[in-house]
Amino acid sequence: MNQISGWVKEAQSGNRYALNQLIDYYQNDIFRFVYYRIHHQADAEDLTQDIFIQVIKRIRSVKDHTLFKAWLYKIASNRITDFFRKKRFLFFMGTTSDLESEDCETSDKDSPETEVHRKEFTMRLKSLSKDLSKWEREIFLLRFVDDLDIKEIAVVLGKNENTVKTHLYRALQKFKQDRNFREFLQASKR
Amino acid sequence: MSVHETKHLIDDTILWTLIDPDKLQINEKKHLQECQLCQDRQASLHQELSEIKQLSREFLPKPKRNLRPVSIEKTVSPVFYRMKNALAYTLMIMICVGGIFGLWPTQNKDIDQIAIEQATESIEEMLQTMEKNQRNGTYSLLPATFQYIVADEFEIMSDPFYDYVFPISTSEVDDS
Image (cartoon, rainbow over all chains, first blue to last red; front, top):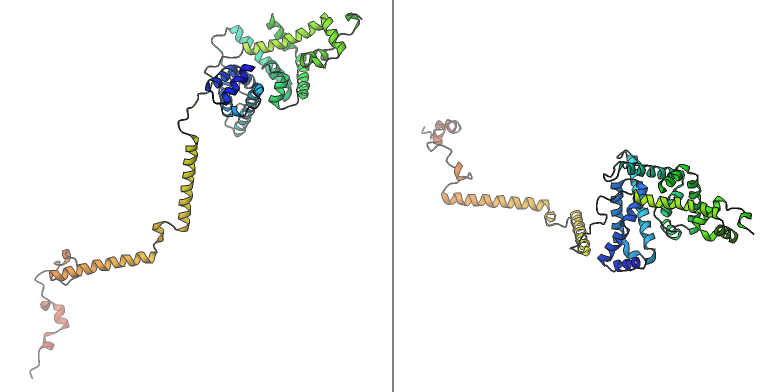
């Protein structure tokens, strides 16, 4: 974390190398964060780039260097909200046909088994997400997909830590009731 | 008191151990430390949640392009663009204001003034033509091209119309 803080400090003073280090360090995390919310690779790539453009523009506004990660995820979260807002508007205006895009692309490198496994994982995760409320879903994903701790989640979502814990508790209760997903995870583990 | 004599942790408590271990009461913490069954339940749930994290990384498609945004080198200072825009807006406002209040040179001349100028010009032109005709011995206002349209042989005295206006008989002196 000290290294990250150092890069943030350097980037704020105009060090391009430090900025690139930060972007390289977090680009996979942010791409994953975006991908598991919009489920479309090309859009996720575009959004990830947009998020880093915002980071470059606004990095000087980071006051607490230790909270850079939370600040970064907050930008990403806002950008995703904008993306869905724009998509809903286009859907309403009739310029786009699908409100929820589905990524049909498959990787050539993956075996058919892996591909089936991947699709099932995505389907189970989406199915669970549908059972969760907006905040429960967001907090569950931030905690168990993006690996943020409670304090960071509270900063990203602008909520009290106790509120985050309560939402997470409810989300875990629903996860515990999702037998299909749990069986899938247990089978993957073996 | 043996571990087996106390009640096992309920599911909700197991959930809280994953969210906020500090929230557990002392006896619950103690039970968890000693009870293998409760530890297994907690570990199983923890393992499932860790599996989500692992699979989400494993099944994440690889980006097809570099996600680092292409940095645009700024060759011109943004201040230049701001100044340029400000100048353009000022010019536009000046043009509009000038147009509304008639401050442009073409709008200063009165229509009467233009008419007087045109009339003076045509009079001067006419006078020049007259002077030129006088010098050439012609007394017609017609330009030189049109001076000799009338035939040279034309004699006014032989014109019947002249005879009609001035009959010869009346013009002669009566001798009687």
